[in-house]
Length: 93
Image (tube, rainbow, N blue to C red; front, side, top):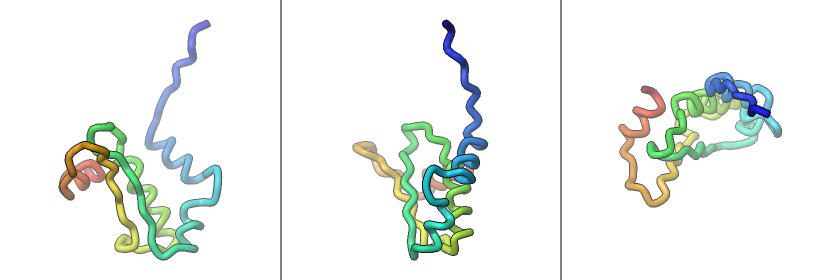
């Protein structure tokens, strides 16, 4: 038996997960909150932050939060700290 090859479309997958979440919608959670934190990994992990963070910010905004109410936490582990320009480069390439 040959394993099935999955076609991955991260942009579609992120938007699908936000439209049809397992629990409450992110926008609904935002309506009940004053602030939010988005946790992402550092540049060593290869997560496509430019595909994941903007849709999450959009959902939080739909729920009534302003950009100033949202903190982005970069989990660097034991890696060196990232500069703000490192983070901005990954979010908006």
